[in-house]
Image 1 (cartoon, rainbow, N blue to C red):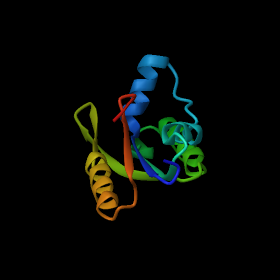
Image 2 (cartoon, helix red, strand yellow; image 1 turned 90 degrees about the horizontal axis):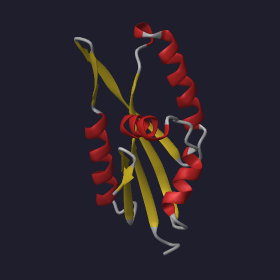
Image 3 (cartoon, helix red, strand yellow; image 1 turned 180 degrees about the vertical axis):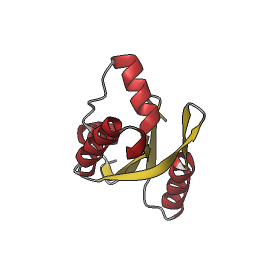
Image 4 (cartoon, rainbow, N blue to C red; image 1 turned 135 degrees about the vertical axis):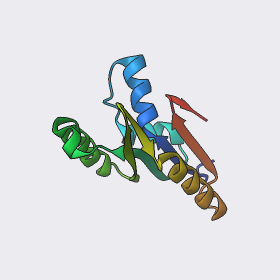
Length: 126
């Protein structure tokens, strides 16, 4: 088991909403979270998927997200993967995030980069 390689794939927006709804907080230490999920196995990498906020549609929100990205990018073995936000009326929708996550999982599986994939979304792991 210690030689087994684990890839962790996090749908960031879904995890954020779940943490906020269930715990009222979002200050998860992603380095410790990844180590816990890996369970003693080698960690290939943690991939965090989300969409970047447009700085011209809310400067404070943009600055908060940039601070979060800064901390995330300093987490060992963590890679930030960005889609985009599209506005439809009053609603913002992520585009490209789910597809990027799925393609990355498949490409890495095909190349045998990991033995086990862990998908984190809505506060659950599969």
